[in-house]
Image 1 (cartoon, rainbow, N blue to C red):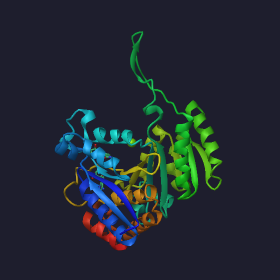
Image 2: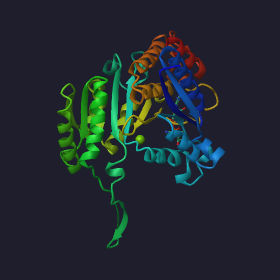
Image 3: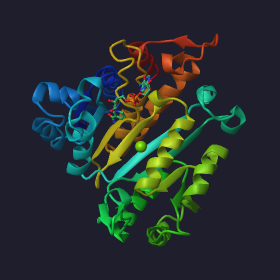
Image 4: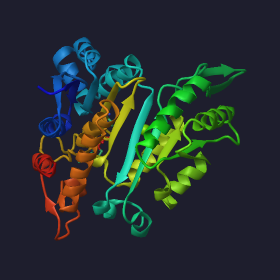
Length: 363
Ligand code: NAI
Ligand code: MG
């Protein structure tokens, strides 16, 4: 018997979700053999699979399975079959938003990693990204302009207008800032806080709180950057960044920008964390209906999501490092799924299952 057991809710979802999830499970099985740990996995329906089998995108029994787990490993949801449903019942909105709310997932971690073997797939010039880069965007997920009240549409004196409120409280800022500094310690020890303190009051408070929290982390280097400059710096010299700390809206934009610099959506994991150790882990991409059912999807985003789960929810940094290293090894060996295949002579094209097997072998 392993000393430690972690309960994992496995929610494969739709499209390529189940295909890539199968490979992540293989990797977790390999970790069980290598480390003194066991994963108690419970499968549950979500998204279109929830709608088809249990009548809704987030069935009650799926929520219950998640509640009884230490973390959620999520695939992807959605597809043309469910696009005609009312928005709130659709797979993405009907499952992801409620999951964030129910489990208090206030923090989104979105790595943008470009592996040295794949610099050719980036939209940036080779010399800008030579040797690869590894940025982690830490995005506040439950506050800021997307959620603050009042918001609405009204007509005053015959003029229609829309309005939103941007508000951040000190505790909200402090909570996300601590996450950013804690994860920075496990990486490159640099935090760049993104704001617009020259025009926004929320950003003035944001900066004050970040400065204060930083005093507890003398080993982590802090810098501040206006969001417009950050958007520019990301394409100019991405290697200058380690952890980028952002509020909800800036993080939404910056994380998508950073991710696309890597040029390979099938490679990027993400995590949404609650207070404590609970978190939900999923690929950054969607259910890829265009390639679903063909067994050719890239399982690496799902596998790296499992690695993040080990790192951030189970404190198994060594095992997470081993998975990340195994992924790098197979890429260096020239193994590619179709989405990252460039057709050079040192590349070998693999399907989803073969890529999972190669990563397990490298482990
Ligand atoms: P998508 O990420 O599913 O696909 C965009 C492109 O990237 C496609 O060409 C796809 O084949 C490719 N791609 C994505 N992941 C890949 C992988 N692992 N391996 C190889 N290629 C990969 O985004 P799209 O097309 O906008 O949305 C498709 C469906 O996914 C929609 O129903 C959407 O609502 C849903 N979606 C779900 C998300 C989630 O579950 N968190 C996030 C984003 C979209
Ligand atoms: Mg977005």
